[in-house]
Length: 159
Image (cartoon, rainbow, N blue to C red; front, top):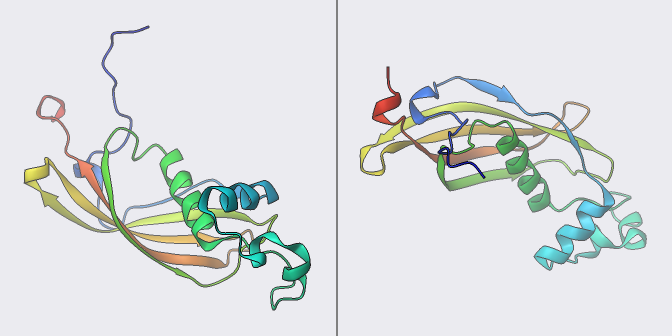
């Protein structure tokens, strides 16, 4: 086991710039995702878990939980590496769920830095991200804003 200190690979607060955009890779939503999310959350709404019920709904099939899609979106964002080791907290979010996501749909996330605000007392700053979740057809299924508290670059790392 190494005694070497962990070196974050995420972006420091100072490295985020307004207008900066990044997109995640895609991830296909599976039946297992719906079943597992229902088990973890306790949300067994038949629109998500009962194929016969959902078939007779306005959607014609089971719909993924909106909060499942939000959760997957946060995971996809984290997998980019920009938050790894440099995020202190997920402070707030506001998401509008505009289109259904079905089993077999593939989603990806677009993040754009909307605003930055230094928080010296926290040795970092707030970064507000405009977030859009798209399906495989390029249709935005969720849109909103996330605010994250990011660490400042340590003094010894600054040029």
